[in-house]
Length: 356
Image (tube, rainbow, N blue to C red):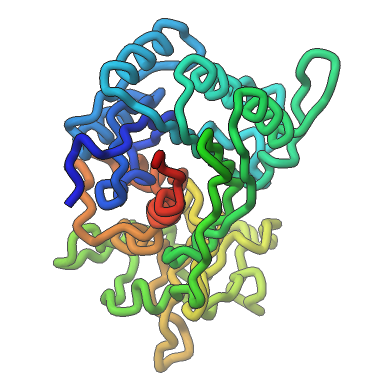
């Protein structure tokens, strides 16, 4: 057992509610300071990690940066993990660099400059690597800019797009990962030989229809739109309602609804789930329908979106993950949809360079 004084102490920026940090207690890394913009998320975080100094506020405000720096030094931290907002880089968003959130990764670099951590993880959606940013008199990709700046500060930088499904998570969740270390090149962990399927993750949970509840914590079905239920009932596992010959998405006047093929669809059983987004409570959004089971009348069961319990498993979290009792269904679903997959974080930390 490692002595707490032997642990590497760190700072988590844009920490959401700390989902990505959930397994760090077994890695020799302890997050002592964290930052989150939204008060409810900061409160959620603090209930899970009561011993962490949570600093709630905007990193664009210098007093918040000053408080972070103070606590970082008080705790003797030497590691930063950061997941800047992805809205400006996501394929599901507008990829609009006029949105000021797209430049918040620069605040991470400012804190790196001031705090000089030995090791750094920066995580975002894959579009972060290719998105051009306008800095001074040139346009440069976020990846190249961050790499240049970190190398000037003496870091060896290693970058790749990794899929959480290759690291013990039953969900295809591809993320741009930048690892930086002052010790040596931080190598990426070897991927698993086998991916976990949806069936393996949630196949033992009982079927539920719209509005039904169970005795299993967090395994309760949201009430669905009756029209969505009808479309889902006639959609096979891994299928799209838009392919149904009769029960396809339509307006009340019968006009077919135009949508992306990922909308009004069921996820497949025998592969990892598609990426879980923050809109996972809506059947009309991306790949949110339960896979369902074929019934004797030819329709499919579980005409609904995934329950919170199913989402936890799909994210790689345990059934007893400590969700605060006051947290709303929307808040829980949003933070799960925005998380840094915790088992991927755990594996990344396993290869982190350590001082001799």
